[in-house]
Length: 496
Ligand code: AHR
Image (cartoon, rainbow, N blue to C red; front, side, top):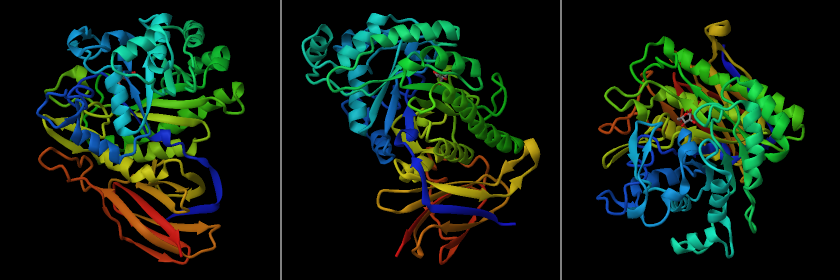
């Protein structure tokens, strides 16, 4: 049987917030140091210390928002150690991640410069676990105060006359765990207190983001919403796709066939988590003023053999591309509540879009999904109905196809399709309703691989890369596409 998809071009379901395509960069392993920051004196070509090859690759993705400095690191980070002349900055131990020395060379000014170069919004995560209200309050003042104040003067003395615009500020990270092992009642009170002093100065309006739950911790969400919803603009959710257990997560490459299905099924669990957390939020915020921000998501495997276990360095395959595609589709479906998401992490850590080794760099299959899907950013989500085949049955099963469609400001419709089946190609019959014109297909791109662990290496960086997709037919407003196994495609439809 063919898979059937009906797209209602005349039924828009709201905007897909571009921030769903956000990223996360932590002082962890080789994400910041080596991956992004090489320093001004490095032989690796750089702009103000940030490596040019990675910058150029990331600019292509049109990253809307970047979260920093953690993660668990955020609740141990003291921002004042990371400003002023670099040679005078304090060195600290990064206790969470490998016990390595953090020299604080990448601090507030360097991060804000990175955001400027990427033309993205900064999302800064403050320290509740080991910081003080004063320290957090002064960080916001340092960043955004336009006028005469101790922090604004210090910023100017450090070379930045104008305040920056900072829209997104997180009040703690994982405060149920690495951010202080707090109970929800205690954190809710602390959140209320800390956020009071996170001020919006001048024309800078800060969105205050509360630390939300992980996975299915519904009691945490309930308590935070009940006790603090009036004081927040958004609340976070963290969920990682781990094929195995916490102690044996599974390998990024060379994994058994069974782990293909398990991984994708676990990734699809995001749908249930968002649905149930949103239902709790609806009780306290029926008008959906408060955003749900999934600011850590993605695959988490055992580290690459021979690498520092605290550095979380893993390869990235076509399986990760599928995880990215189907998860982004989940976010689209919930875009009335999900206002931002940040895949973990940007470079060299977990499900990265870019990997580096010395002066070399490669783009991962996940990178290509973000590149292909960027057409959905800020586009109108279209009503889409699917009747798709199942791979396997019941709780062991998976849908063969995942799809999402949107219309951009120029009126073009983009349809993204994932074939989750690692063995069979899939025929998809697509009907476009509510569109008077005849369809002309302008563009089609596809990312596919013949191996379940197909990936790019520094010697073969283009093994998994997008190609032009032509395996479709068009008749009036109907299309039939044949997707190879394990593939992600994006079609652009336009009319005469
Ligand atoms: O992304 C890696 C870590 O996962 C983050 O530091 C933490 O917030 C989460 O547990």
